[in-house]
Length: 336
Image (cartoon, rainbow, N blue to C red; front, top):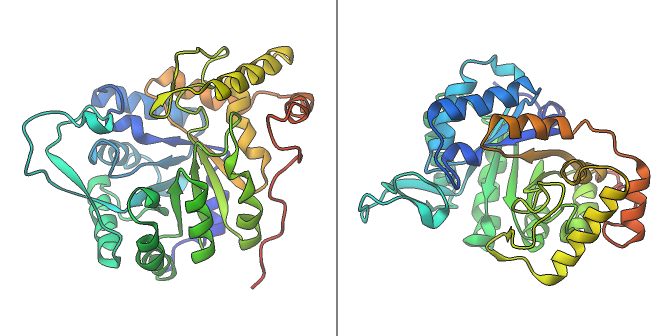
């Protein structure tokens, strides 16, 4: 039986979704009760799109999210998970934690890259088992640029499209952190979505160059990591804050300060501007934001609804800090 069409699923995602990496004990340990409270806060704030992955806590995120969503009406939320990494027994397990990947979970399992058609199907089946659900709505290939982008194009993307066309999932896409990967996967397959992590944010927009082509091809975007490792998560940034995997470069620090100053001048909280900015691009359907505390999640959902004057965006554009266009990616989707 055919599941709902991609357009229907995308329409139900809403402007903000919850990214469930923190449920996998990213950066710090959560109890099951604490994880449930985070999800309660998201649900009570009106969030109805939830994104997870086997990578997040070696399956812990999927198990926790699935337990929560099994208590909710299935047609009231949109669920996405990812493929590309299989979880297998770690023969070198010495009882340590998975801290090399920033997850505070036992490293009893290891991640095994597998972009083959069989690997993609197996990954989905195992995710459904961990979730305790009979389907997910959206399936993403996770981080192809970190393994083998050519193999992703040759094997993984056709497998994803086949799963969509056979009705196993409603929509398919790719989650990536690089513009080169966005270009490659968008050109190679009829994807419904690309989840762009950290490359289309208030601080930096290298992916802006590929959004018009995505729009032309009928591929929508989901913006993730919109706080750039937390740099944009507080009203005034700190110089020693982490940027991805290292120290924040001076050039980006100067840019961040200028953005924060303009937000202050308009009395707009920097985090609110960061959450809402990606949606100014017509091709961006939704923003995915994480959080490890209920208050964080509730506040982020509220920030999506804060009123932001057009004058703020105009001043940021005039300063060369965001694209000059009022909205990026207006090209109509291709008809053939």
